[in-house]
Amino acid sequence: STEIDGVRQLLIDTDPRLLAVTVCVSCLHTIFNFLAFSNDVKFYRQIKDFSGISLRSMVLNCFFRTIILLYLFDNDTSWVVKLSSSVGLAIEYWKIAKSVMVRLVNTSSGWTLR
Image 1 (cartoon, rainbow, N blue to C red):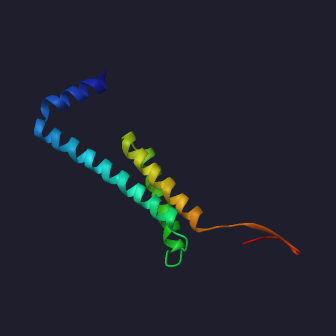
Image 2 (cartoon, rainbow, N blue to C red):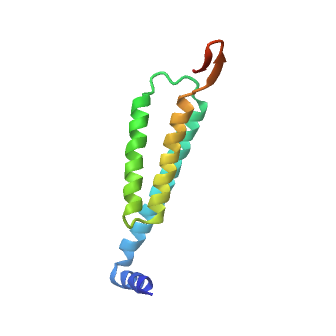
Image 3 (cartoon, rainbow, N blue to C red):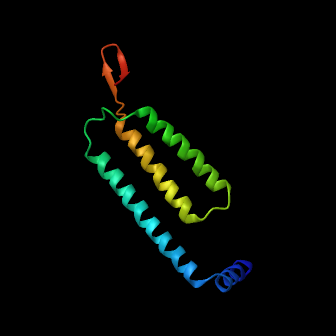
């Protein structure tokens, strides 16, 4: 009930034009975020040769995104922001898994990684 009162107070005290602009900007941000995710996945699905793509920067990006996501879960953050950050992190880990193909191969001297 206190949350509902807070929303009521927000709607009463805030200029309707500001609320409309905020909703429009939020919708545009969500659309552009989705387009960026889909473009990233499309690029990495089509790529066959990973030369020129730095694995170190991909790993560092995953590390930083993980820290940011843990920070978001620790604080009182909107579930939309948490969801967007989680999807972005999952895509980053998928890109690393796609770029690093590790296979166990049985050779005459035993199992080796390739």
